[in-house]
Every structure is written in C-alpha cells, then in structure tokens.
Length: 384
Image (spheres, rainbow, N blue to C red):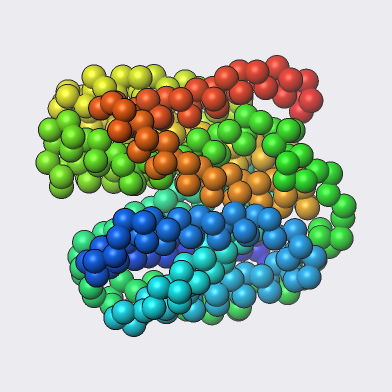
C-alpha cells in the first residue's frame, strides 16, 4: 500500500483524537460545574485522561507483544467511542464518568504513541520534519475545534458529543479498511535497547522538551486566561488569547518542519527554546502592551510548539522499530506528567504573585534550554 495514503490515514486518525480531547475535556468540566460539583471533583475528572495516557505509556510495549498495530488501533478507537458515548446521558454517575475518562485517556494515549511511531517509520528522511510537523499541526488544529463546537452548541447540547462519536466511527471504518494486517508485527519481535527510564537518560533534552510543551499546553488552556484577566483584559478576550497561542502553534509547525529539513535540527530546537524563554521573560511587560501582545502570543505558540514537534522529528531521526515505540511511550508518559504539573505549579505561583504564569513557564523552559545546551556537543559526537 502507498505510504502517502497510509500517512493520510494516520493524520486523519490523530485529528480525530485531537477533536475528542479538545471537545470532551472542557465539556465534562463545564457540565460538572453547571451541575454544582466541587472544584476537587472537576479537577479529578480533568486529570483522569492524563492519567490514562500515562498508563498507556507504561503498558504499550506489553500490548505490542500481544497485538498487531492494526488490532491496537481498532481496539483503541472502539474504546474511545464507548468512552465518549458515556457522555450522552444527561446525568451519568460519577464512577461511570471517571471510568470513561480514564479509558478515553488510555485509548488516546496508545493511539498517539503508535501514530507518532508509525508516521516516523513511514517518513522519508528528506521530508521528515515537514510530515511530522503536519501530523502535529493537524492534532492541534482539531483540538482547537472542540472548544469551538462547545461555544457554538453549548455545553448542555448533545451535538458536540454526537460529532465526536461520528468522527470516531468514521475513523474506525476507514482504519478497518486501510491498515495492513501485518503492521509492526516483525518489529515487535526485535529486542529493545532501553526502557522508559533508559530513554530519559539517553535523550534528556528531548524528554525535557516534551515535558515542557505538555506543561505549556496545560497552562495555556487552564490558567493563561485567568492570568490575562487579572491584568485588566475582559474574560472573553483573555480566553481568546489561549486560542491565539495554540493557533500560532498550529500555523507555524509545518514551516518549522520545512526549515528543520534544511538546517541543523538540534540548533533549531535550541533556538525555539531560547525564543520561548525570551518571550516568557518579556510577558509581564507585553501583557500591558496591546499592540505588541497579540503577535507575541502567536510567536510564543509557534516557538513552544516547535520544541515539541522537533523533539518528535529528532526521535524519529535516531530511533527505529521497538526503540522508537519505547521512545514515543516515554513521550506519552512525560505528556501526562507535564499536563498534571503545569496547572499545579502555575496555580501555586499565581497565589504568591501576579506574574506566576510567566514565572512557571520560564522555569520550565529554562530546564529544556540548559539540557539542550549540554546535550548538543555530546549528541553531535554520538549521532554524527
């Protein structure tokens, strides 16, 4: 089967995962809030998908030993379909909702890990940056479509859930028809060179890049509107700022991927980190500069998103087979950790001072920049 066609199938599949995540995360939180649930219950329900993704990272190698890639894709989309259908009843029980949220995170985690691995396997090295960037941009773009649907139909409507269910059904049917039956079976027989923790020791800069972006993504979605509104911006405009940041991430990933196919990828990766740090340091000043803030937010999203996308590109450049699956499993684990840590650390720093959000972002990206600077000479010796 044509690799370009398979890449199209995988990009559509991850787009559906992004839509499912972007629609159900705010939908559940809003419905629980309107039903009078406390902040603790809402926080736990919001964290369960991230916990499911972490569980997927731990289980992925064991799952790959018992199922082919095609079987896992189909099983996980069926799992996501059932988990989203649990949102259709007007008042689902909290235990059922909690189980559905955990299973949705597990299913999405396996799909993202396998999808990133297979896309990197199918890529031509000459165009790896562009293809991986397109894959990441489609995920982010469809993630943004979730809140837009809720804004259009309202949190009480069943239409957002029905749209997500329809897209999951379409993905399930297309994957059933398109994925080869023997995908990844041969690769799973080969031994792995390292474990999840072993990958963190081998590639600390890549791991910290993923951890930072998960941290950044969670903070932008949950606390950046609060930060902006506390500095005089209207609530609606403050919420729009989060969309502008993620929109910059989506729009600039393919150009960054194109650039990464033409210059040193590690230098570009480090450059994205330095630019993100500079904008984070300038944010306390920019937040009051109405003409400069909006383009700065777009560039901030592009640079922060580039840290994640280029980490995926570099992982695909240097690892293959079961090692690539393990590396992407580590990505999934770190994504869950970053998603949990981001709101917690930022919220704690916001309670200390008005610049808690930029301080948290600067601390997180500084870890990546230091690791990238330290790993660059060693990486050039190992991978050259």
